[in-house]
Picture 1: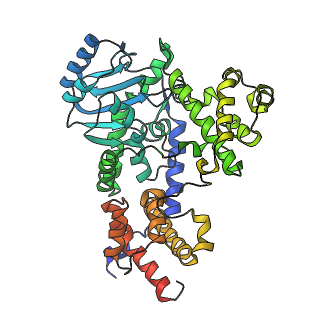
Picture 2 (picture 1 turned 90 degrees about the vertical axis):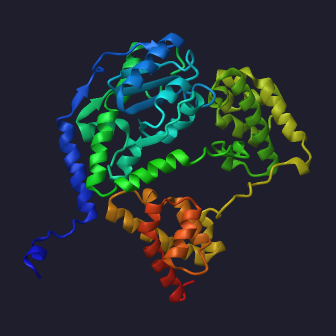
Length: 433
């Protein structure tokens, strides 16, 4: 062994590396500095065309990537539209734009075309930003970067605190951002959300370079932008909380009819469906099938005043469901695309269950080795599909092709195809399949 080889340190155990990173972040947290106000103060809310034109001119004259965030009114309003858009760019400062007064930001999008936009957890905001005409062409997602780097906590507040040493104000993320006028402390919170996003991006970029994960991150960011929005679920009412308590098709019909009636009301009133009628009340109606106002109002879940307000709507929906012919009743479960739920595999296909266990073991080991969550090493759905329907010949090329067909990135295939092919081939050779 040469002196150089003898002096080379042993590879650090992944668990030790995670523990060391947590300890470093805990130590840094002690010295974290509260960030109470934006550097240039709270920018005025832009809510008219003249103000928007000034913002467009400022951001066109700025330089570097653009920090972007959006605030919605989840849990208060129907849908996921943006009620405030926040931006920041070097040389331009920060801007707060009201999409109610300025519903078309395509002019801003045009002057920023080709520039990198920085978002935290981009999947949450891309759809509502696209609705107002703001569509990133290049992306840096600080939350996704944190996951690839193995940061234990990847919320924006935690990332800013642990990476940059500043404490952001918390407390308004779940507010009703459709409120007008927006309170000053909410606007301060919103402006601070983009205040340090550029600095956070730069620090994470350097971390990704040092960890040899920058190429992985860039592939992930491109995939986020290129993945089309998921189509609407064919039967969204099946996701009603507590629907597992419903035991027959007639009761399922009640769930469907009441859910659809609630959805129409919620859309008409621009309210979150849960504020019109809680899921618990829908399930209670399905189980009890009330036929009179008294029977309906006797349900414990109907004590909410908002739910009682539309009692005639709910009774009509229950009555419709009770009067449907058997042929019109919904099936107990919707035929799914892809593998069945994994808890049924051991009984339905024991060989597939063993493949799944082996594949998950491989992915978990790689996650430990590279200090990141297993779901970022390879999407759980891709693992399930490979285990359920593996290629006939278990080679790295065939396994890689199967994974690419279900959305795996090139970097993921390079990382997992060889060990997965070996693990599955070993199972087959041992006669365990």
